[in-house]
Length: 206
Image (tube, rainbow, N blue to C red; front, side):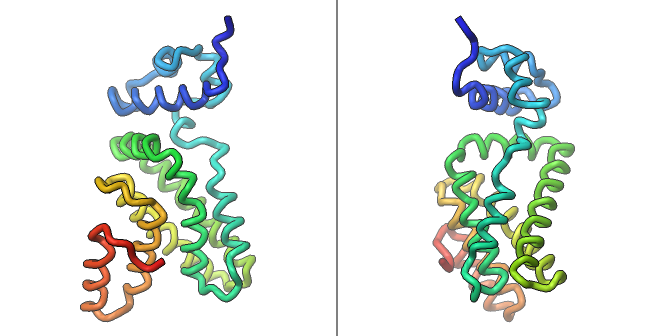
């Protein structure tokens, strides 16, 4: 009877994340991942080039979603509103895999080398957003700045989401965090008031 099953990739990913969190990324072997998933090493390599690709898959649709959402956002929206639209459109990619996303983040947080890889991934997403904003007619500097602000605030929102004991949606955290970013140049008392509202688990601006 064949070992191949339709959800082999998902089983391998689940097994890998469990092992990474239990015994550490570096200490985990591909053979152990395959055994835990009830599959073979050959099957693992059909889906992943190496054990890092479990955390950083080459076929991640996130960049395409951000690019398409930026391109199709209503024309009158200012840059940060476009970014908010794009990031909230991408939120379901994470929300439908919330448990795995939280496990993945725990693995990365425990490994400096993986943290560097994650930062490189975020930099690539920033470049994707900047390009999409330039395609909308923004000047290079404006597009780059808006994209960097967007990805930086997304990182904060994502960290809040994976550590949120009340399990508020990622899209809510994105909106709240970007709303806070919009007020960074406001008087100090206004920024403090905004933080009090947005970071107590209440929904911010839609």
